[in-house]
Length: 472
Image (tube, rainbow, N blue to C red; front, side, top):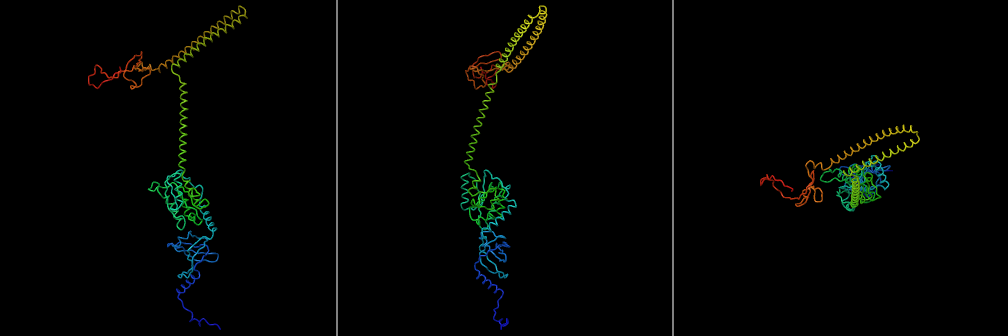
């Protein structure tokens, strides 16, 4: 026969709510001191205190989780809803709400496949917004005066960049030190890109012409800071051209798609940033040499053209002589043509005269003589007109040449001074005392000797400054 509940009621211990909650808390913590739980993050939120609150769920159950502020900074990744993770920690209860929960101390993605799926989803989302569009990308400046580098201030990356820049083309470099992995790294990188863009153009700190975001190689988890949305958006929004140099050549992060150029290594980024100074100097020297040779060839060609034109120019006397020669030639040809024409007419007349009767011959002879006289008269008039025209043209050319002669200037009272070699003297400095000279006037020349001493004219008083030096 079973014992009724009332019979054993006096043997059951009595607990307060707090005592029972604490016993349950100890029981849970002793039974599950350290556990690893795999699940999908749901309801994630970050409290103002820095603590993280979320839930882990699978198809059938849900487990509340909390990560305290001191541990949240060492998780190594940024939790978000939908992310499948493996959390390590301990189970405990929260007596204030009669709920049990997991205190997370470590968190990792549930396999590389889950991380790759997350990155692919994020990549498609950002690409749909146009952040990776080719038309957004800008050309890098050919020779930046200032280069801003966003990287860790310690390590080989910044040393490699500075060394390569010094080898190729020494340039001013501004380093914005940031964390490159771990909690807070993404925020620091994004703020560094935004900070460089916020610098005024003419401020005390020079605004870079080019940015390099660099980090050494590492695992996919190590490079996660450069896959975060805020970093990608900051790179896409940068007004300064940006080179992404994260990881090694085989590593790919989302900032690579938003940057204007992607470099396989930080050293390669420095090579993209500046040209080789020695090559530029060689190119400039080559262009200078080509310019000098081109100018020399151009000067030589122009000199040859000028010499050819000078040879084609004739002096006034030569032109007059040629005109006279042409006139003589035309006159000679005219006399010869007249003689030949008369002889030809005479021959034809004699031929016809032999065939005609004396009376008819006399008539035809008279007709031919009359026609011949008329032709001869016309010919003489034509010759006279042609001769008169040629003479007038010759006189006009002679008058023109005479008007260009310096003797017209002498006729107005001027004189030309010639040295011992017969050359015109153009400067008083060319004359020395005792030199023999000739003075050509309008009606002839006179010889003279240069004295060089000033003489007073008869009407000038001693001490009068109005004096004039005489040449003779």
